[in-house]
Every structure is written in structure tokens, then in C-alpha cells.
Image (cartoon, rainbow, N blue to C red; front, side, top):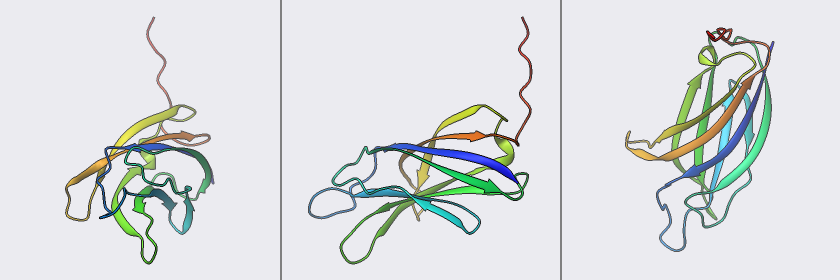
Length: 131
């Protein structure tokens, strides 16, 4: 099992999904059946979450981490969009910070999601730098 620490930094330039007020975003993150969710930030199109989650990954060579950005509503939450990263692209023991484009259901861009991922005991071995 590989250990992966994921920090959801925040989102920027989210579309306003609400008629009254602004979007109330939160992020769901999952690998296989293991799922976590950030807190909801009320009325904010550029929320900062700064929440970390730890996953134990069964097959880092094939697994994908998925992110779904949601808008919290009273009766039914709406999906703003999603992003994903293949775990075999992460560098071992290095903070992989990225701003991922969020794709809406129709494929259009729906802002960006900032994440930091640290593959503690799996991933691409870092290459030594030439001096």
C-alpha cells in the first residue's frame, strides 16, 4: 500500500451557480471507494480550503485520484465540475502542487482547483540534478 497525502488548497474563478447569492463550494476527493470532503465555504467563487486528507493506495500504478467541485444548496447539491490525476505521474517524496482545470459536465472550463499531493512511498523516482 502506498501512502498519499492530498491537500485541497482552494478554487479560483468558479462560475456562479446560484440565482440568489453566490456559489457555496466544497470539494469531494476520492480514490476508488475511499472518499473525503472539504468543508463548505459560503458565497465564494474563489474559496480557500487548506484541508488535508490521507489515502492508502492499493495500486498507485493504475489508480486515479478524482476531484469533484460541488455547490451546496438547500435541497440538492449541484456539480460544478471535476478533475483527475493519474497517480503514476507523481514524483516520490516531492510536493506535487498543481492548479487543475475544472471541467463542467458539458466539457467547458469551470475554474481551477489547487491541490498539493505528496506520494510518500510510491511514484516516479526523482532524478538527481546536474551541477
